[in-house]
Image (cartoon, rainbow, N blue to C red; front, side, top):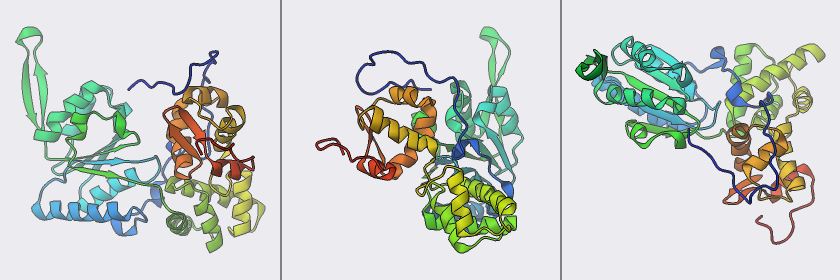
Length: 353
């Protein structure tokens, strides 16, 4: 992976980074999808309208021609439906899906065993594809372009490369960090689609559908409450619904009302805008310890006792989306909206915000 450098002025003293990240309720990358709650077709999929409409066309065209779908790359934050769309593509094509996480492909032999087991026009899904080892990624190039693998036969100067023909397949890959993919790899995807955060209205509908599948009695206002605090992510919305259900069953009559949902989410540390304690800690640290910023990410990571990757991949995208944080060449800056949300004095006159 690429090395990253801290923004801002040199540090006065070194501070050790935390040994391990703290578990987070709202970290979609650490939550598992519930297969029972996944939509079964494109028509059941809520949100990402442009992406889904285009996929329907691409899939239907491939079926009409009797060809494999072009290789597809999904990018976007964790928990917003990339894996679900891969399953829906396979379902729409009427073929099985073989799925694996990129870290599990330890060497070329593992990749070859998956590719040779695919059926004609089958779908091969690789999650977190930016974590593929370079040698494995390069081994994938001829498979994507010419549907063949080069198998080495023999050793030393007398070794030969034996071409092995593969079935025509569709590689569907998902990544949260497109910038870590090499240009040659990116160029081999015929369909590149980016998924965005969901609106509260879309998340409310997802919560409503999930409640029906789970047999949860959910008032409309409660669904809106959960959808509003789910930070634009269906996986988090479903996770919060299950936790709110627990409170409703144990401390109420089992019905999820707006009052029950609001009380449960507050007790879980999720505020009205979907920020949790770590989000608020990050903003308070920038405002109170670094005068609102700018502050380099390494300093911020040490001051918050949290891993840099967690800040960059989980906290910052949503805080930036909500207009509470800015990334500048000199470092991170808390905006006026962040001050107002935390009930802190507004930034000084003449600041970046």
